[in-house]
Image (cartoon, rainbow, N blue to C red):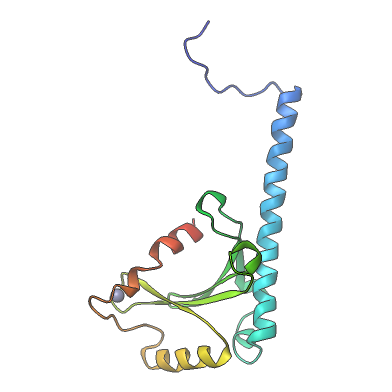
Length: 161
Ligand SMILES: [Zn+2]
């Protein structure tokens, strides 16, 4: 008899091996479904709410969906790389506490160490933000002591694992 139980691969064709395979397939299918749904929800949100701006600038293929991270209580989401360190992040209400779309523009800070998230309210709000960013080519100017540019580093690290 061994002192400790080492993980053992279930014998091929055994009921246990089949059960493990089934569980693996369910997880994989569920994650793929969540990814696709997150990408579709993001594209649909741009199409309906940002028809004159984001929907013209981005293709559906620009979105990358991520499944929910249950132990971190993060709902499924989709991100789109815009260029130059700017990202769009979209999450849909069904997985968050509030039943609504949340679209966030994530902008790098001029200090190079952080990002500033702008939760977008509508197309006018986006236009104002973009007008402000245009002279810098897409950075926020770092404000010492504000702490605002550190606020999404952890979130991004989790989203892009
Ligand atoms: Zn900064």
